[in-house]
Image (cartoon, rainbow, N blue to C red; front, side, top):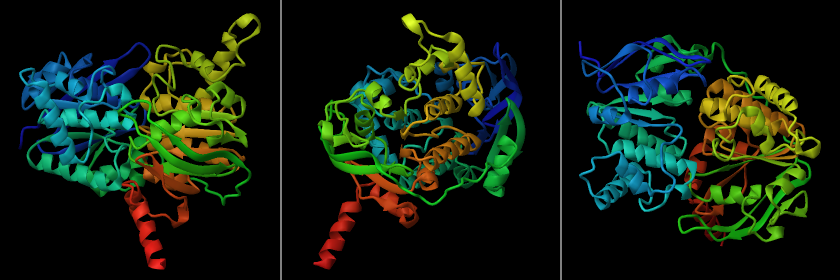
Length: 509
């Protein structure tokens, strides 16, 4: 038998409040694409950090290429040939893309040489990025591209990918899968974490399922269905979404000819964007990360107030110059794509993070009513099935998916009249995704106007009534979900809707 590239035996990792990994064993063969599947908080991230050397196990052994190893740090792991793309990125905001990538490579390389390699690798894999851009100017999706490119440049023997396709068009996903299959054919082993069950079934030939920090199953996902994988992962199938016919009401949000110059040289100019969202409907905006979503959302949330007042109207009132608090008073609640830093203060507990968008827990004289905050946070935790060490658990102590559930739940719990959410289910498991999407549809059915900006096309097709696509700072025409197709939206994500419209006009002429 071939010696496994990676073998874990009886790995256990305990924290004061939880056992993250319990007696986990796993083997990955050379050239194998091996999925690690589990719901949020199942212990996947902790296990991957142990393999990458950033977390030390309390018990168990790690064997790499037949040799027992004690991985003390990521540098040692990279020297062995292990590279990882984290769900929460390990990038320095003040450094450029090239400088961040350079930190993880051989220091004998020159920075200019690294920049050229980034450009070549990005072009090869369809992950275009400017090596000279500071990381703080990138969207979350663009940061993910940087992490993927950095990992590929190390020519790894074992590549760990955590939710790698959320920034890609369907066409680019096909191309990435081709790259991964090519890497596997050359002997590179791949550990692949994704909550997209159809991806796992298409790409992977082995799968280890975790639940509650323990291995609950091993299978070949190509012999499974989405339903059977869901049962292995969460013990049941997610409930089907109830998508009722739309009864759109009054216009809640109107964006009228929004034209706005980028705030920095690496941003995207918004060019004549116009659309509206009515009460009782969900409008989705698709697009590859870095095409103006960040700039549009900053303008809609009130973080960027440079737009002319009438360019953004909330319930008929000019709002282009209003700050977030004033917009919340009008009934607009917003969930940003960055969970830590914008959606939540990492070091604060979940209860105190409620204060970011709530003022009703502050009593006379400015005193915070702590007991009321904790009670409120506990109710959100229970309603949205958030796995956390109680209402005072620090935001950064939660897994990405559980923190996402809490932040989305916090804003839905406010009973908004207009709800704007970016990447609502990025990095959450199928059960949690179904819960969040169901709550969004419940908001819509209660008469709330909902705008969803997402790079997950399946998600947009699940919950949207109408769709737009944003590309290079411009917005496509609206199309009913029932009339849209995945290939069509994928083409529009490359900015091709204008060419098709022009062809139609020329035909009519």
